Length: 328
Image 1 (tube, rainbow, N blue to C red):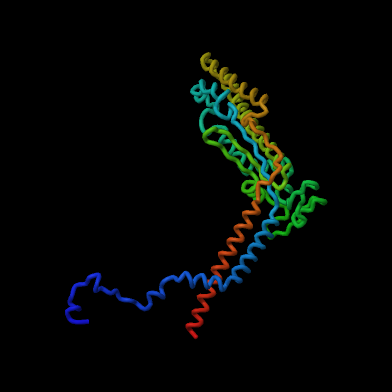
Image 2 (cartoon, rainbow, N blue to C red):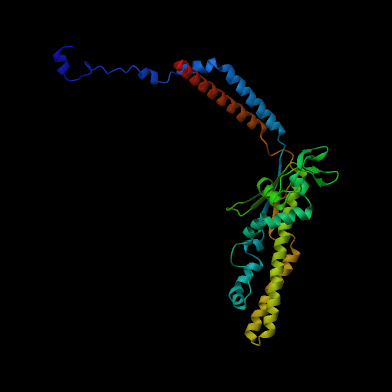
């Protein structure tokens, strides 16, 4: 290169980019990558096959879970109608008299749903219907023979719990254990904010039990809310009767009489309505098809995971092999 050429300005015709010898080594050679994968194809196939077989075995080991659900509509009492709406006319006078007519605070639908998921309600539900074995010890269900209990957990013949656990746990599951299982695995409660409709669902290995528990839950929450309102109304009546005896003002006596009438109506309607808080629109039925598990999806995911790990293993193995060759 002459001196004039060296001093000439850089133009596309005389500019030659500098070539770094390591530049091509840093590029990803797809042909080499596919070559590495092809050389390790038997490793990939073997790992994928192992994961696929494992996914099939795992999916077959899972019991079928059936889901039964019911659609409910809040009644007038739950949505603020009926007696609650009429009691609003006397709300101010009731407050002066020290009586709560239930027109303030959370609506009864929200309260009922929270009670349905509460620890006390679930514990009482399990104890009343004696369903602890069906909740904690079922291994599977057969259409011909029915429920199959896990022999290592519960002896159905002697009705004894035989599971082996470490202290402080006991062979028989505590309320802390079965309430958690009931909340997380069995019970599903949802409310549509647009329509106000409520859905209660139960997941279980037995379709008959799933349907029966939904019916019992609806019945129990209606009874619980009925008893709750009756007890509250009875306490209000006792207070109003006492205050009525202690006042001589005719105006206040008239107020007390009206409040007593409202509380009496509350008790009367609570006793005559079987579906006090929730009215069943679509009752629970015995499901004929399982809700989960999706065995095909489990097998597909397991196979793809095996293939991905197989490719990763081959690439990492090749990297270590190159490092060993460079060191040698």
